[in-house]
Image 1 (cartoon, rainbow, N blue to C red):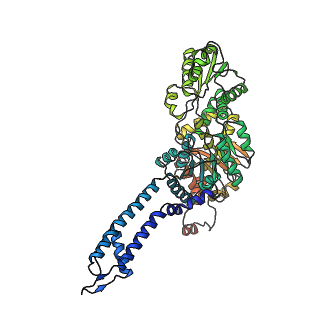
Image 2: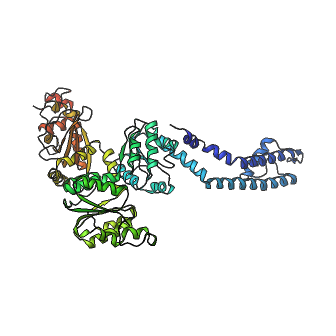
Image 3: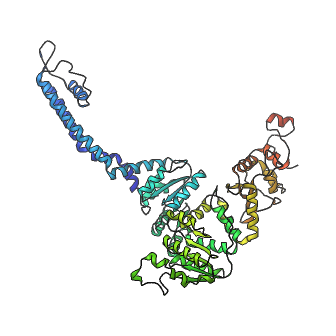
Length: 582
């Protein structure tokens, strides 16, 4: 790892010494001259005989005098020359302390010093981390959403961002665990190094800034310095995405592509779209409403730029008739020199030109939120039956778009957050989401009904169960027998006749996967199961897989004693796997 920033963090004490060098020298000189003067000025003992103070006595007197303690005149009362000298030293030390304290306060207010101290404290926090953590480069809206989502899962995060305001917001945010945050440039390999890129517990790097070049720099740095650490990067540029993939195999998330894929899915498979968006939203998310978008007819996409081009291409790939209307391209609008960009993009003539009376869908895709809101309002007036979609660029506009009651809304930050969450939260979730579109809308509707009946309208937790000897020792013999059915494993260990409030979404065996398997699916040792359900179901299932007595009751209905003595009395030999079927 680069050591420039690390060296800077470790030299804070030297910065203090450099800034305080002159005040300290002044204090030392005043102290030395004062001690020397006390030793040279003659005094008198108790009998009135001449007496000179030694260096130790002079040092002692100046120590309590300079520190404003003032014990008194020792070992004998001072003469007038001594008192005059002590008076002079008192004022000299006051001047020296005032100079030193003023310099210290000025240094504490210095921006460079505060940054050095913050860097050292940050480095210390990161070096003390022992559990795996995610390094988030860029704490914008996407980083904030992911930070809270992973914090709810008990995952640690480390944040680096160039904005001091965002790092201050991070410190005031309500996280369960302490989140180290650094004000730094993500392009600097030294800052990434001190943020934990070289830490053995760093499990992934998330490049989530709103600057594609910065995200590319993070991807290159991680690929060259830590090729073993997975990287997830955000970009809206296909060129930047291609450059990122030239360095290893990072996971590149393009919110424009992702929204286009989701809109295509919403058009031809509303239930599949509903299931995907629900699972991507994380624990606690409410089941979204299932739309009824038009599958035939003319779509109008209003805007210009990369997003509009990619969205039009995705919709045309579904066989839809798509018309792209660019702002200011048609007639009937004022001269460009006489209107602002917002007027240009929201002018009623633009909507009239698109002939929305004969359209079935409308997408407002400009890079201005006010323009998109105006376009949606005009389109709704022109044709109340339109399927309306829009692009939201700023998080502050969320209440306004919520009041518009849109059928589909693109919020790039939320799209990226959901994609990254699906990739890193649970290993099998992303695989399951990729398989959903190919399974059909009726199948997706059935999965939603099962989830809703067992878990309610709010998504609970999603986790992975591995049927290995280490994570499921209580059922290994049962799995090897070839009669291990999924439905029997999903029973409640407290009441075997009841089913756990959880739905198996996917079973992975090697490279093959079974989607939403039924209760008769035969399990095997080494299988991985993606499960969605209530937290109580997760705890119960873990108990079944780990405790032999519980596993025996769940899979066979036998009550097996848990103590060694009762096993001997009931002829259960030591080491016998009690989950073995009869």
